Length: 350
Image 1 (cartoon, rainbow, N blue to C red):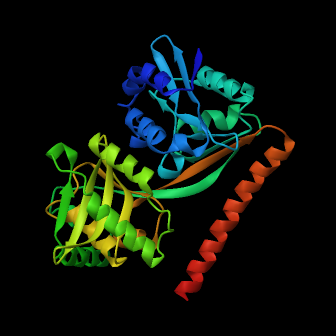
Image 2: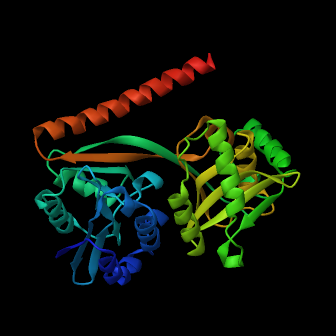
Image 3: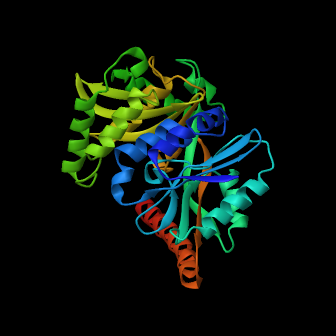
């Protein structure tokens, strides 16, 4: 049976079901109840869209589709712009064909939905696998990529990178040694630390004034969201100091032993690599099994840390021929953007 949740009270009614699914190792922090409800209440509900969370249940099994309809009538995942990997919320290991057939029918029959854009989908996740087939004429294409490394005990990170050539390990060891000159302070609500709002705002303002970020970057509603998920224990904040001045900060999302670099703020671009090195190998290294660099496989991350890699996917679906043609066009535009980026990188290298 499919139920559509359109109100915050409705979210409260399915909270227990939602939380019971969060223990699955495939689920990221972006699929948690706290993340989605916090995003909706602090900023997304003010953007002109409407809540549209699909909940499917049968016997002891359930699936939550944490979505909303934006002001253009497009069904999207909640907070997709601020998330790195998206998917439905489910317990893996089952055949969910019937469930997603009913979810697809629900989407097709909803008059308020003109189209679907589900971005940053996890490869192998149920959303891409099932709705990519069951929504007629859906287009699925690569939209981004992310990277991660395995964490090691403090002091053992460089030695654990056995896949690296010896020269790369030597360069990484030198970087770690250099980073050790810059103190790293970790803020965590579980340790009773207040959210370091002054440091975050100062760095944000510096990035705005330098032109590295637009003038509306991290507005007050986003800061409220950040502070809220910090209080809920979904993130820590790593702050890098130079002569007691804050030069960089990284908001680190946490779930199931996975630490994800979410929002990065800095006064000097070089400070980002130093902060990463401290998080991975310093005495106050991040605690967990995996350190995820998040979406965006920038050259300095790949070249310095040689991380594991994966792509993310977008699914586009539209009602009517014209909108379906535009969905195909969106995939072509994304492909062309990747070509342009590649040519620019080659031009810079030459």
